[in-house]
Length: 320
Image (cartoon, rainbow, N blue to C red; front, side, top):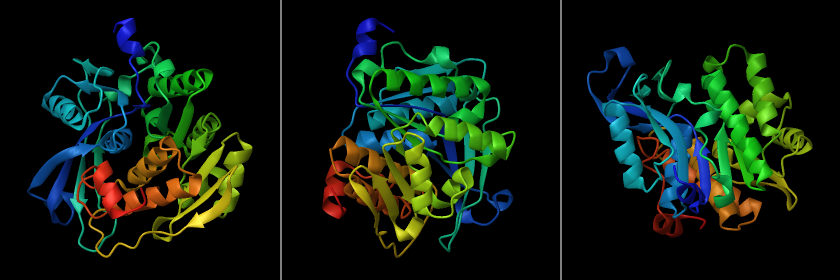
């Protein structure tokens, strides 16, 4: 990478594991499904896609195997306008993938992950491109990447430290994956340490309760504000979101959805709404309202990314 390339302007940097996604074409247990359709997955990739569709310039740090799944993901990123220069091709380790079932009642679908030993799990701090943050406005992280390996954990903390040193905004979605951690205590300690490096923390109510020991959204917000966050937005599901920051506190009502097709990816859509709202200069309550609107849109589509709107769709359908 040249110094010129590293300094090219961008709006958002994020890092994580991009995975192939195989979605069941019929309801039922995964072992009984005969037909799947291919899509893409990965919390940070979903956020990158959502922000790129809204016109933001996104750099995405990841690693893919030198295989057909990796090539498909690279082509998808190019199609979505995501800068691929920081995606390393790993000839020794495969691209991870996941399988997702289908439901007919709006409940969470069954999911199985196949990511152990993946190319992305071998990421480390040395994969961080030099000079990326002087050219970026915001770093978005989740609690998934630090769970993948010790190297990924070091990379994520190094990214947060570099972004803070450059005066950039750091946003953090805990996005709990307990099965990836050696213990619940390790998960809680690591993710709360990472949250202490963030300016904006976006927990769900249930995960916030687990991570902080607080019973309600206000208490969860108090915990992270005391830890150094400037803004906290707690996802309340259909009930909306609770926000807290220098501009005040309150609850933004949820957006009613008549037909919930697939709940996976709703939290990433919410993050897209909040982050894009803050990048647009919206106050926190309006950013939270946009998060609710995009999260509600995502659950009406089968794939993780399919419901993420363009700027024109967002303006036509909800808070802009």
